[in-house]
Amino acid sequence: MALTEFGLIENYFTELGPADNTLLPLRVGDDCALLNIPAGQQLATSIDTLVAGVHFPAQADPYNISRRALRVTVSDLAAMGAQPLAFTLALTLPAADPDWLAAFSRGLRADAEAFAIALIGGDTTAGPVLTITIQVLGLVPAGAALLRSGARPGDAVLVSGTLGDAHAALACLEVADAELNAEQRYWLDRYYTPAPRLALGAALRGLASAAIDVSDGLAADLGHILRRSAVGAVLELDTLPLSDALRIHPQARTFALSGGDDYELCFTVPAGRLAETLALAQSLNLRLTRIGTITREPTLLGRNGGGDPTPLSADGYRHF
Ligand code: ADP
Ligand code: MG
Image 1 (spheres, protein in one colour):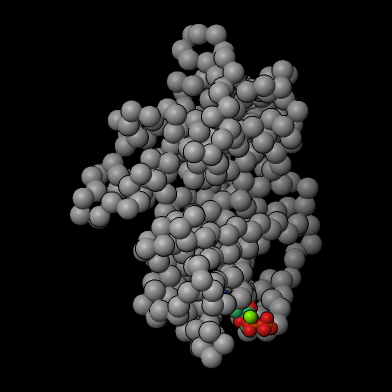
Image 2 (tube, rainbow, N blue to C red; image 1 turned 180 degrees about the horizontal axis):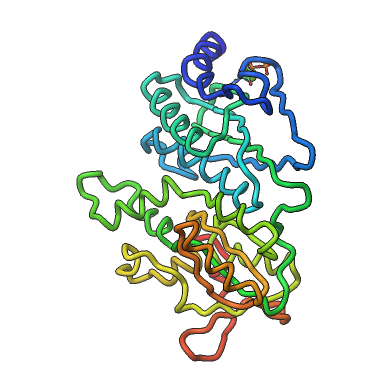
């Protein structure tokens, strides 16, 4: 890799760098990246690693792999109410295949432009398993970041978009393209290109009492809010938002409650601000659903229809 490292970076990654951004004065190529942080802003940063065969199929389309890698990390910025600024990319490659790299770079470029996030550096190594690490850097007004710790009894619990689609996709990752039906295509699209809810996160600053992005499943991720906030919740299970594509699936509700990879935002707002929160759905053109209520008793309960709330099974907290 040493022989080709610089050519590889020059060919596939330098063009994703910043252009005319006073906050990012350097292009890729120095020993460090430099960032100018505006007064009154905090730098928000998060890092995610995707390993071939663990987090995506090794044979997946590289155009999709890079987009998914960037999107799942940018989603953490959304969950904090931060705006994307820059990212770094650490790549471990079994081989330097030009076709693979070109498609990977094209996907990354498309989404870096879409989310206004510039590549400012990275590391490239040869190694046995394709591994992609992306660190994102974002800006948030000082003191305004959305945390997991602010939920209070009586707050409404809401979620954006629909849940469970990406989990349904896991069963079709290896299905030949020609054999996919319309629903499976939709699930796969949700899996490979989750939409970081950046506009929602920004709108929730000063409004939401707590927020998280749903990466491990609603029950598990809401559980993080509950523990950090020392509260519990009752979920109205028949309100969990399902896509038309998932509704037909026999396990739709289980996937919505416990399946991960959707990268929607789960958040809480004081009851008195529920109406203005729900009104955001229209201005953001994004489905927002109230799915439950925060309670003083620190347990997570679920209720079906008008029934009594019962503790959600441990499965709700475990990965599949
Ligand atoms: P050093 O030896 O000083 O750590 P490297 O040889 O690893 O530097 O990298 C040279 C330059 O290329 C640095 O500016 C680094 O940030 C950048 N770079 C290396 N790999 C990548 C990558 N995958 N994506 C973006 N920039 C990269
Ligand atoms: Mg290096």
